[in-house]
Amino acid sequence: MKSFTFVFVVWAVVLSACGSDVGESAIDAQVNEAVKGFQESRPCGDGLVSANDGEVCDDGNEHNGDGCDENCEIEEGFECRGMSPSVCDSY
Image 1 (tube, rainbow, N blue to C red):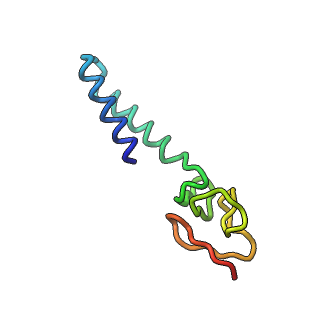
Image 2: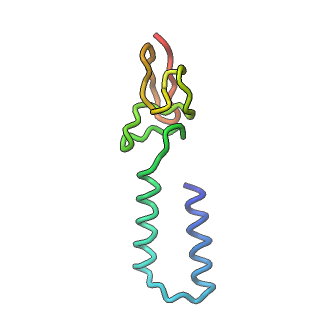
């Protein structure tokens, strides 16, 4: 979220420095759309479980054999807990 905030701040500064006539509601709509896109597209392997993307686990990598596979699904013989990142143990 820090990089998104930084990009937005830089963008707002550029707009004001250029004397843009973009209305505040137009900027709000663009920001809301950008945040929505950012929240909806969480890649498997980023260490954050995203139920919206069908992730059951996310251990921060895309390797198989460690409990959480490359599709962020729990592998057979493992149980995973936690959301950021998931920790998986064999049983």
